[in-house]
Image 1: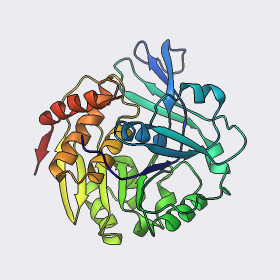
Image 2: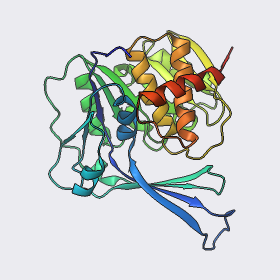
Image 3: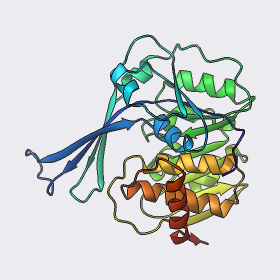
Length: 298
């Protein structure tokens, strides 16, 4: 693998994710038995974890606990804390007994409350990846500032948070959203119409939109290409979209052909969703094999 000269900086969330799986079919308004696990999550962290397989990555986020620091063992990730007080925040993902995602619960208000952070200075020529956990005020200020000399990438995070970028679409180079997020952002009922509406506002932006287990859309240079993910047994949907985004960001930075970018990125998301860990370049080789099962569509 050729080493890239690009520098990746992720600005956003790092916290614990609690994964809650129902043991049986859900019984409404009654106690349901579950299996629970915990892992480090947050969109910024999930994306950086994929990038760190290939490159050194910096994450700019809130102060984290000593316990969380001990568990962060990726040698290529450096955390830059922009406040002094440890904030307790977390995310809960609920899935059914067949591992299908049902509900996400975010206790992440502390990101929103801390909007007076001083932005780092002299950041030029980098890929800067934002999730939407920080406040609208902070995001608008940071994205406008850094867009002058850097490549700006936004991972939409939640349909409840996409409003934060509505006024700064012209400053974004890459945008990652799921179906719900892009329809909410554009007030459209169709993914294709939503893509072209954003394209009218910023024709240089590359946009990737996922539609659950269905097609993935990629708009580049006014053209839309799409592909269908391979059939897999789902074991872990939480973070699959972030894995796709992280891989796509890396492949774009290396100027891979568009069809390979889309196929390998989709395969990365599917590989994660199947429950397999992505921790090194051997996993990347397995992902490339899986990408042969991704179906390009007209």
